Length: 359
Image (cartoon, rainbow, N blue to C red; front, side, top):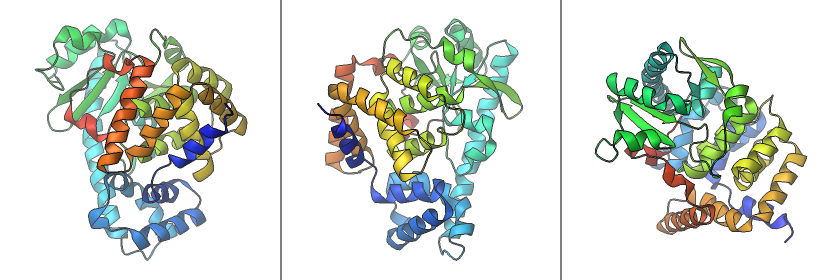
Protein backbone atom coordinates (compact mmCIF):
# COMPACT_ATOMS: atom_id res chain seq x y z
CA UNK A 1 0.00 0.00 0.00
CA UNK A 2 1.41 3.40 -0.98
CA UNK A 3 2.06 5.74 1.98
CA UNK A 4 0.10 8.65 0.43
CA UNK A 5 -3.12 7.46 2.08
CA UNK A 6 -1.71 8.27 5.52
CA UNK A 7 -1.10 11.90 4.57
CA UNK A 8 -4.60 12.25 3.14
CA UNK A 9 -6.17 10.74 6.25
CA UNK A 10 -4.03 12.92 8.53
CA UNK A 11 -5.13 16.06 6.68
CA UNK A 12 -8.77 14.98 6.84
CA UNK A 13 -8.44 14.41 10.59
CA UNK A 14 -7.24 17.91 11.44
CA UNK A 15 -9.06 19.97 14.08
CA UNK A 16 -12.15 22.04 13.24
CA UNK A 17 -11.81 25.53 11.79
CA UNK A 18 -12.15 27.43 15.08
CA UNK A 19 -9.40 25.43 16.78
CA UNK A 20 -7.16 25.76 13.74
CA UNK A 21 -7.61 29.54 13.67
CA UNK A 22 -6.77 29.94 17.35
CA UNK A 23 -3.64 27.83 17.00
CA UNK A 24 -2.52 29.99 14.08
CA UNK A 25 -3.22 33.16 16.06
CA UNK A 26 -1.07 31.89 18.91
CA UNK A 27 1.85 30.33 17.05
CA UNK A 28 2.34 31.85 13.59
CA UNK A 29 3.80 35.13 12.27
CA UNK A 30 1.93 38.39 12.81
CA UNK A 31 0.35 38.63 9.36
CA UNK A 32 -0.99 35.07 9.44
CA UNK A 33 -2.08 35.52 13.06
CA UNK A 34 -3.94 38.74 12.23
CA UNK A 35 -5.80 37.13 9.33
CA UNK A 36 -6.68 34.09 11.46
CA UNK A 37 -7.90 36.28 14.32
CA UNK A 38 -10.09 38.37 12.01
CA UNK A 39 -11.70 35.19 10.67
CA UNK A 40 -12.17 33.77 14.18
CA UNK A 41 -13.61 36.96 15.64
CA UNK A 42 -16.08 37.33 12.77
CA UNK A 43 -17.66 33.94 13.46
CA UNK A 44 -17.06 33.21 17.16
CA UNK A 45 -19.53 33.66 20.02
CA UNK A 46 -17.39 34.04 23.13
CA UNK A 47 -20.38 33.24 25.34
CA UNK A 48 -20.88 29.84 23.71
CA UNK A 49 -17.44 28.67 22.65
CA UNK A 50 -17.04 24.89 22.27
CA UNK A 51 -14.75 23.24 24.80
CA UNK A 52 -11.79 22.79 22.41
CA UNK A 53 -11.79 26.53 21.60
CA UNK A 54 -12.25 27.58 25.22
CA UNK A 55 -9.10 25.60 26.09
CA UNK A 56 -7.11 27.78 23.67
CA UNK A 57 -8.69 31.23 23.68
CA UNK A 58 -6.76 32.51 26.71
CA UNK A 59 -3.47 31.72 24.99
CA UNK A 60 -3.98 34.31 22.24
CA UNK A 61 -4.29 37.28 24.62
CA UNK A 62 -0.64 38.30 24.41
CA UNK A 63 -0.83 38.48 20.58
CA UNK A 64 -3.90 40.73 20.39
CA UNK A 65 -2.24 44.10 21.18
CA UNK A 66 -0.05 43.66 18.09
CA UNK A 67 -2.40 41.95 15.65
CA UNK A 68 -5.81 43.32 16.70
CA UNK A 69 -5.38 46.35 18.98
CA UNK A 70 -8.98 47.49 18.43
CA UNK A 71 -10.63 44.12 19.00
CA UNK A 72 -13.70 44.31 21.22
CA UNK A 73 -12.77 40.94 22.73
CA UNK A 74 -9.34 41.95 24.07
CA UNK A 75 -10.59 42.72 27.58
CA UNK A 76 -12.57 39.52 28.02
CA UNK A 77 -9.83 37.30 26.63
CA UNK A 78 -7.29 39.06 28.83
CA UNK A 79 -9.47 38.19 31.80
CA UNK A 80 -9.55 34.53 30.75
CA UNK A 81 -5.75 34.56 30.45
CA UNK A 82 -5.32 36.04 33.95
CA UNK A 83 -7.76 33.54 35.44
CA UNK A 84 -5.90 30.65 33.80
CA UNK A 85 -2.55 32.03 34.93
CA UNK A 86 -3.75 32.38 38.54
CA UNK A 87 -5.09 28.83 38.62
CA UNK A 88 -1.88 27.48 37.13
CA UNK A 89 0.27 29.32 39.69
CA UNK A 90 -1.67 27.71 42.53
CA UNK A 91 -1.12 24.28 41.01
CA UNK A 92 2.57 24.99 40.45
CA UNK A 93 2.92 26.17 44.03
CA UNK A 94 1.62 22.88 45.37
CA UNK A 95 3.84 20.92 42.97
CA UNK A 96 6.84 23.01 44.01
CA UNK A 97 6.33 21.94 47.63
CA UNK A 98 6.08 18.30 46.59
CA UNK A 99 9.25 18.55 44.48
CA UNK A 100 11.11 20.21 47.36
CA UNK A 101 10.02 17.41 49.71
CA UNK A 102 11.21 14.70 47.34
CA UNK A 103 14.49 16.49 46.61
CA UNK A 104 15.17 16.89 50.33
CA UNK A 105 15.04 13.09 50.60
CA UNK A 106 17.44 12.62 47.65
CA UNK A 107 14.73 11.58 45.19
CA UNK A 108 15.39 13.13 41.76
CA UNK A 109 12.37 14.63 40.01
CA UNK A 110 12.06 14.69 36.21
CA UNK A 111 9.30 17.02 35.04
CA UNK A 112 7.56 16.12 31.79
CA UNK A 113 4.90 17.68 29.61
CA UNK A 114 3.94 21.35 29.90
CA UNK A 115 5.46 21.58 33.38
CA UNK A 116 8.87 20.80 31.89
CA UNK A 117 8.53 23.67 29.42
CA UNK A 118 7.53 26.02 32.23
CA UNK A 119 10.60 24.86 34.20
CA UNK A 120 12.65 25.88 31.17
CA UNK A 121 10.89 29.20 30.61
CA UNK A 122 8.06 30.55 32.76
CA UNK A 123 6.77 32.64 29.84
CA UNK A 124 5.62 29.44 28.12
CA UNK A 125 2.96 29.06 30.80
CA UNK A 126 1.16 32.32 30.07
CA UNK A 127 -2.51 31.69 29.36
CA UNK A 128 -2.36 27.96 30.09
CA UNK A 129 -4.70 26.38 32.61
CA UNK A 130 -2.91 23.49 34.29
CA UNK A 131 -4.51 21.39 37.00
CA UNK A 132 -2.13 18.42 37.02
CA UNK A 133 1.68 18.43 37.07
CA UNK A 134 3.38 15.40 35.51
CA UNK A 135 6.68 14.19 36.89
CA UNK A 136 8.74 11.05 36.66
CA UNK A 137 10.43 9.24 39.56
CA UNK A 138 12.89 6.38 39.21
CA UNK A 139 11.08 3.06 39.88
CA UNK A 140 13.32 2.27 42.86
CA UNK A 141 12.15 5.51 44.54
CA UNK A 142 8.42 5.04 43.94
CA UNK A 143 7.50 3.41 47.30
CA UNK A 144 9.42 6.03 49.29
CA UNK A 145 7.99 8.87 47.21
CA UNK A 146 4.43 7.64 47.79
CA UNK A 147 5.02 7.41 51.54
CA UNK A 148 6.47 10.93 51.69
CA UNK A 149 3.61 12.45 49.73
CA UNK A 150 0.93 10.66 51.77
CA UNK A 151 2.60 11.83 54.99
CA UNK A 152 2.63 15.40 53.62
CA UNK A 153 -1.13 15.47 53.09
CA UNK A 154 -1.39 14.26 49.50
CA UNK A 155 -4.00 11.62 48.74
CA UNK A 156 -4.49 9.13 45.98
CA UNK A 157 -6.89 10.69 43.50
CA UNK A 158 -9.56 8.13 44.39
CA UNK A 159 -8.70 6.63 47.82
CA UNK A 160 -11.46 4.03 47.69
CA UNK A 161 -10.52 2.79 44.23
CA UNK A 162 -6.89 1.75 44.76
CA UNK A 163 -4.76 0.43 47.58
CA UNK A 164 -1.17 1.49 48.20
CA UNK A 165 0.33 -1.69 46.76
CA UNK A 166 -1.48 -1.43 43.43
CA UNK A 167 -0.79 2.31 43.25
CA UNK A 168 2.94 1.71 43.65
CA UNK A 169 2.91 -0.93 40.93
CA UNK A 170 1.00 1.24 38.42
CA UNK A 171 2.75 2.92 35.52
CA UNK A 172 1.47 6.23 36.86
CA UNK A 173 -0.61 7.36 39.81
CA UNK A 174 -2.35 10.64 40.50
CA UNK A 175 -2.31 12.52 43.80
CA UNK A 176 -4.38 15.49 44.95
CA UNK A 177 -4.06 17.87 47.91
CA UNK A 178 -6.56 20.52 48.89
CA UNK A 179 -8.30 22.47 46.14
CA UNK A 180 -5.36 23.08 43.86
CA UNK A 181 -2.79 20.31 44.30
CA UNK A 182 -2.62 17.89 41.40
CA UNK A 183 0.37 15.64 40.78
CA UNK A 184 0.90 12.64 38.53
CA UNK A 185 3.80 10.45 39.57
CA UNK A 186 5.15 8.21 36.81
CA UNK A 187 7.67 5.42 36.95
CA UNK A 188 8.39 6.01 33.25
CA UNK A 189 8.64 9.27 31.35
CA UNK A 190 6.03 7.82 29.00
CA UNK A 191 2.76 7.66 30.93
CA UNK A 192 1.28 4.87 28.83
CA UNK A 193 4.07 2.88 27.19
CA UNK A 194 2.85 1.40 23.94
CA UNK A 195 5.54 -1.27 23.94
CA UNK A 196 5.93 -3.45 27.00
CA UNK A 197 9.38 -3.62 28.50
CA UNK A 198 10.66 -0.44 26.83
CA UNK A 199 13.42 1.02 28.96
CA UNK A 200 13.61 4.79 29.39
CA UNK A 201 16.87 5.12 31.33
CA UNK A 202 18.31 7.10 28.42
CA UNK A 203 15.74 9.83 29.09
CA UNK A 204 17.27 10.34 32.52
CA UNK A 205 20.79 10.30 31.12
CA UNK A 206 19.99 12.99 28.55
CA UNK A 207 17.99 15.18 30.98
CA UNK A 208 19.14 18.73 31.74
CA UNK A 209 18.71 20.96 34.82
CA UNK A 210 15.67 23.17 35.24
CA UNK A 211 13.82 25.00 38.00
CA UNK A 212 10.28 24.77 39.29
CA UNK A 213 10.19 28.02 41.19
CA UNK A 214 13.21 27.79 43.48
CA UNK A 215 13.42 23.99 43.36
CA UNK A 216 16.00 22.32 41.13
CA UNK A 217 14.49 19.65 38.90
CA UNK A 218 15.39 17.79 35.73
CA UNK A 219 13.75 18.30 32.34
CA UNK A 220 13.98 16.02 29.29
CA UNK A 221 16.23 16.82 26.36
CA UNK A 222 14.47 18.54 23.42
CA UNK A 223 14.29 15.24 21.52
CA UNK A 224 12.86 13.31 24.45
CA UNK A 225 10.48 16.15 25.28
CA UNK A 226 9.01 15.98 21.78
CA UNK A 227 8.61 12.19 21.94
CA UNK A 228 7.01 12.33 25.41
CA UNK A 229 4.62 15.10 24.34
CA UNK A 230 3.48 13.10 21.32
CA UNK A 231 3.05 9.94 23.39
CA UNK A 232 0.98 11.79 26.00
CA UNK A 233 -1.40 13.02 23.32
CA UNK A 234 -2.25 9.50 22.18
CA UNK A 235 -3.94 8.34 25.34
CA UNK A 236 -4.64 11.43 27.41
CA UNK A 237 -5.74 14.51 25.47
CA UNK A 238 -9.46 14.94 25.26
CA UNK A 239 -8.98 17.71 22.71
CA UNK A 240 -6.36 17.82 19.98
CA UNK A 241 -5.90 21.58 19.87
CA UNK A 242 -3.95 21.93 23.10
CA UNK A 243 -1.90 18.83 22.31
CA UNK A 244 -1.00 20.05 18.82
CA UNK A 245 0.13 23.34 20.35
CA UNK A 246 2.33 21.44 22.82
CA UNK A 247 3.87 19.45 19.98
CA UNK A 248 4.50 22.60 17.93
CA UNK A 249 6.28 24.27 20.86
CA UNK A 250 8.39 21.15 21.39
CA UNK A 251 9.76 21.25 17.83
CA UNK A 252 12.23 24.04 18.54
CA UNK A 253 16.00 24.03 18.35
CA UNK A 254 17.90 21.06 19.68
CA UNK A 255 15.76 18.19 18.36
CA UNK A 256 17.89 15.35 17.01
CA UNK A 257 15.57 14.09 14.27
CA UNK A 258 17.43 10.84 13.70
CA UNK A 259 17.27 10.03 17.41
CA UNK A 260 13.61 11.05 17.43
CA UNK A 261 12.97 8.63 14.59
CA UNK A 262 14.47 5.83 16.69
CA UNK A 263 12.42 6.82 19.75
CA UNK A 264 9.26 7.07 17.67
CA UNK A 265 9.76 3.57 16.31
CA UNK A 266 10.65 2.16 19.74
CA UNK A 267 7.50 3.53 21.37
CA UNK A 268 5.14 3.05 18.43
CA UNK A 269 4.57 6.77 17.92
CA UNK A 270 4.87 6.93 14.14
CA UNK A 271 1.22 7.65 13.29
CA UNK A 272 0.72 10.21 16.08
CA UNK A 273 4.08 11.81 15.31
CA UNK A 274 3.30 12.10 11.61
CA UNK A 275 -0.16 13.54 12.27
CA UNK A 276 0.97 16.17 14.77
CA UNK A 277 4.25 17.13 13.10
CA UNK A 278 2.63 17.40 9.66
CA UNK A 279 0.09 19.81 11.16
CA UNK A 280 2.84 21.79 12.88
CA UNK A 281 4.76 21.97 9.60
CA UNK A 282 1.86 22.78 7.27
CA UNK A 283 -0.37 24.99 9.40
CA UNK A 284 1.95 26.47 12.05
CA UNK A 285 5.11 26.88 9.92
CA UNK A 286 7.28 24.88 12.30
CA UNK A 287 10.70 23.74 11.11
CA UNK A 288 10.06 20.01 10.79
CA UNK A 289 12.41 18.40 8.24
CA UNK A 290 10.60 16.93 5.24
CA UNK A 291 12.76 13.80 5.41
CA UNK A 292 11.60 13.19 8.99
CA UNK A 293 7.97 13.42 7.86
CA UNK A 294 8.62 11.02 4.99
CA UNK A 295 10.16 8.44 7.34
CA UNK A 296 7.25 8.71 9.76
CA UNK A 297 4.69 8.47 6.95
CA UNK A 298 6.26 5.29 5.60
CA UNK A 299 6.40 3.74 9.04
CA UNK A 300 2.77 4.64 9.78
CA UNK A 301 1.61 3.22 6.45
CA UNK A 302 3.18 -0.14 7.32
CA UNK A 303 1.12 -0.26 10.52
CA UNK A 304 -2.28 0.42 9.00
CA UNK A 305 -4.25 -1.51 11.64
CA UNK A 306 -2.93 0.84 14.31
CA UNK A 307 -2.78 4.02 12.22
CA UNK A 308 -6.38 4.08 10.96
CA UNK A 309 -8.17 3.87 14.36
CA UNK A 310 -5.73 6.38 15.88
CA UNK A 311 -6.36 8.98 13.18
CA UNK A 312 -10.10 8.29 13.41
CA UNK A 313 -9.88 9.00 17.13
CA UNK A 314 -7.99 12.26 16.46
CA UNK A 315 -10.63 13.35 13.95
CA UNK A 316 -13.42 12.89 16.47
CA UNK A 317 -11.86 14.48 19.55
CA UNK A 318 -12.60 18.13 18.79
CA UNK A 319 -16.03 17.48 17.29
CA UNK A 320 -18.46 17.62 20.19
CA UNK A 321 -21.29 15.46 18.88
CA UNK A 322 -22.62 12.14 20.07
CA UNK A 323 -21.51 10.48 16.84
CA UNK A 324 -17.99 11.88 17.24
CA UNK A 325 -17.77 10.69 20.84
CA UNK A 326 -18.96 7.25 19.76
CA UNK A 327 -16.40 7.12 16.95
CA UNK A 328 -13.60 8.28 19.25
CA UNK A 329 -14.54 5.72 21.88
CA UNK A 330 -14.73 2.87 19.40
CA UNK A 331 -11.45 3.90 17.74
CA UNK A 332 -9.70 4.08 21.10
CA UNK A 333 -10.88 0.61 22.09
CA UNK A 334 -9.88 -0.80 18.73
CA UNK A 335 -6.45 0.81 19.01
CA UNK A 336 -5.92 -0.56 22.51
CA UNK A 337 -7.07 -4.01 21.41
CA UNK A 338 -4.62 -4.00 18.50
CA UNK A 339 -1.82 -2.57 20.66
CA UNK A 340 -2.34 -4.91 23.59
CA UNK A 341 -4.15 -2.51 25.94
CA UNK A 342 -1.07 -0.94 27.54
CA UNK A 343 -3.11 1.94 28.89
CA UNK A 344 -4.65 -0.30 31.53
CA UNK A 345 -1.39 -0.22 33.48
CA UNK A 346 -1.99 3.27 34.86
CA UNK A 347 -4.30 4.38 37.67
CA UNK A 348 -6.08 7.65 36.90
CA UNK A 349 -9.32 7.89 38.79
CA UNK A 350 -9.18 11.65 39.36
CA UNK A 351 -12.19 13.36 37.71
CA UNK A 352 -9.81 16.01 36.35
CA UNK A 353 -8.33 13.35 34.06
CA UNK A 354 -11.30 13.75 31.73
CA UNK A 355 -10.57 17.43 31.12
CA UNK A 356 -7.25 16.96 29.38
CA UNK A 357 -5.59 19.44 31.73
CA UNK A 358 -2.42 17.58 32.54
CA UNK A 359 0.83 19.49 32.73
